[in-house]
Length: 537
Image (tube, rainbow, N blue to C red; front, side):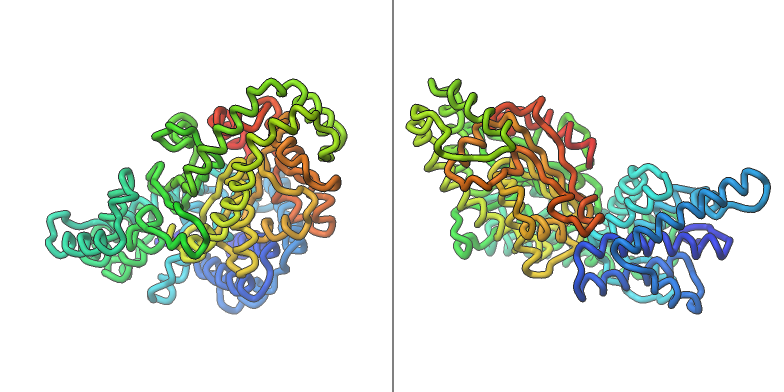
């Protein structure tokens, strides 16, 4: 059975061109040989998914890149509207109506094509089972072009991921060899020290290499459920192991690993599992400061109450003792006797285009600033180190060969920025789909730094900011007068990227002024903040 029943040759060509243009738009942000190689691979998978005759491949592969690809897609959509009007007048058939007549099958086929499975039936070979972040961004773009709800992509991802998880993790817990390998890994890496909620991941990761062959019936039946036959290669031990690699369960996944923190100058850096769902994408949520006595992840309310599509969600902790000390310092400073003077000065500065200068602050506030300066300075350095180590983790695909969304507030947002810049310097594109930066203490005018971040995110760079955050303004009182903070005023994409409409469209500013009045609100009102941000995800 074909992935999508589009009988008309023109409709197939039209849809293939639209998908390829969507990929070329995404690719433009990354650039370079590696991104072009991905673009060609994505185009190949689309062409084989839609069974476009090989004689026509060259023309479709010649589609433009970057802004020109976006213009081409817009032109195709205008032609589509003309076709629809003609069809309604009885003057012909509409290409778009046939393409979008079965949105569920279209989304299912598109997801599998993004996984590189579009060529399986044609070639009968074992494909590289990877889900590049750029492919997912392209899938969302195709749905947007066609006016289809983006939830279709997530729904079919969940269906496919559920089948793959069964294949990757099936087996009997009583298997002696599985228990032996699990015990050996515990001795070698110390799984139990970091895992409570994520213990199941370790079990699944252990069993992939031992009893993967038992996954065959589930894999074949599962993929058949979405109308895709001819994927018998997945009913092998190698196919099941590949599924485990995609989902990040082979070897225990990111929550089951310990990392060499000494190389990055950190004492503690570890992941805990926040939510486990049938997902082809993952979310890493990084606290920027912590309540001293907190036993659960500060993102737990987001998981429990928000209903956001986080996929497989992990909380990344780095130097929790320092972050707890920072939270205490922020709270003491915010409740100090100098608060009224500090707030007045902070609001005056943010009203004047956000310029920060030490000479404007009251003397009482400067004296009390000693309460917070030291833990803040330590936290800044630790956050940068954690960002570099996070780049190591993501580049190694410990989370699986699938897209990841990064979320951070305060210092952890700085860690995410550092991670993105580090990935860019290594040419590691197609890993991060979206980054959410809340109250980030970073210069909003640093064009090169933000360009690196935009290069590394395949879909969106979301900046949550609040001009009312007087604590953040005070913390940067010693900065140069030219510094403007992204956490206070967001980014100005038109000024940062005057020559790249695609880069400008990636940046989304979210004004949190009605929620955040001081820096501690990023922790205290995290659920409200994420609800506001979710409207842009």
